[in-house]
Image (cartoon, rainbow over all chains, first blue to last red; front, side, top):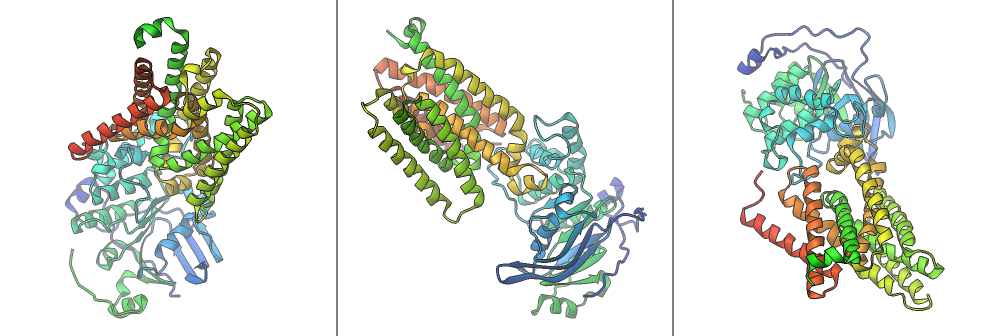
Length: 276
Length: 274
């Protein structure tokens, strides 16, 4: 394993005017408490489905308020790794610590955006009620939603840019809009760690850029791990790139070359240079 | 004598209407969860296993309604356990329980001396035979269901909508799922009065499915389903009185026709406008 190297990347300023113009305005000072535990600390983790080894002796660390891109070929174990961090899977060997706790104990402080929506779009529910579900487990579980929770999601909808969809039924949303609803639901939990599994799969390139700008801004107040296939976007917006193909290799974004990418994917990769 | 006039003068008809309305309310409260969670088949399994409990209660000389309750709740927990365990052939296992429940009931009934006509009323429903003193019990049970649902609606909706996400948020997913099935079981027993065991599933699912055509939230679906179920029961009871037809079957047919009309109306509009 290559030791992770942290490289300070320019952050998109959180100022609304700057984000509206899409300008990157240089590194933003992000104070991180000296005693803050790693958001993710995975050591020697192996995971199998039956006989098949999905993850083989994987080490992976993500610091507080760091944004890491996770890439790798299909079936390389990316989604499995997220599920281990969430406590939905248990490793066959090794240790997973999240926010200094066990994954199960940390789950309520993790925001999770799954690759595929786990619900049917015909479910009779409006956007605001989906987003509210991210607040579940923060206060009492029973009875109607407290007013404070209903009020709290206003800022989240605003931040993700879907305030105008608040009363819309989910069946009437485009793929990109639904993706933003899932991100808002994850943020409604006020997480310390945000895990995104291919959040831009159904989004056009303009939408993809604005989402990655959002993730970059979010890294000012939480740790972010984002799975993506688009290295072009990833390397512009993240601190490090972690490449997972059964084994984990972590690069800082400056050292990614065609050769290293090809080695990771284990096959010929067609590189298309594009500037967004 | 027409239905309205008869309602004013006949106590048993008033009892029938009250019992029917209470059962409909229960169906409207619980049915939408069954429809959106797509567990109609599980509800069918619970309903038909109830016959085993009623048959055994008859054989032992106990109240068939008590037998129905016990077997419904046991079936709900058993079927819930099977469903949660994720057996490969869940549908086959539930189908087997469905058949075994009915067969057990029929065997015990056949071994009970004499043929009980009121058992037939549980199979096919007969609102006109509901005793006056049962109304209070039904009302308490429906009130209890409403209260429990008021408390658990929020986490239950989270579980039904996206189970994985709900689990990550610390919602007790399995407990709520089993609670839902127990509430289905209680509703099934309440509906036995109105439409009988065989047609329970119709009143549990048709008003809720119809409501699903028009509602934008689960809460709204519950309101529409409850009102629709009460309208079907009242309409079905009136028609059956007017034309001397079996009440349970008439109620189910009214619900079925209304559901089909709603489906056609929605299709004609090209899907639900949101």
